[in-house]
Image (cartoon, rainbow, N blue to C red):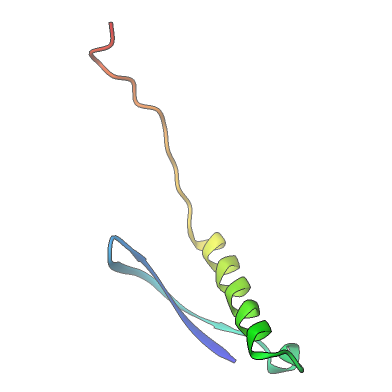
Length: 63
């Protein structure tokens, strides 16, 4: 099974990819279980693609 995924930021597509799940791994799963497997794979893909960095910015007018 091939799944096309698209990552958007602020409404702009920034990354597209295609995930593949072997049909043999899906076996006798129900439609609901297949959907859950797809969501798990997409979440895993997103975790690898997304990185957020942050830092505290001091207020220059602090007294």
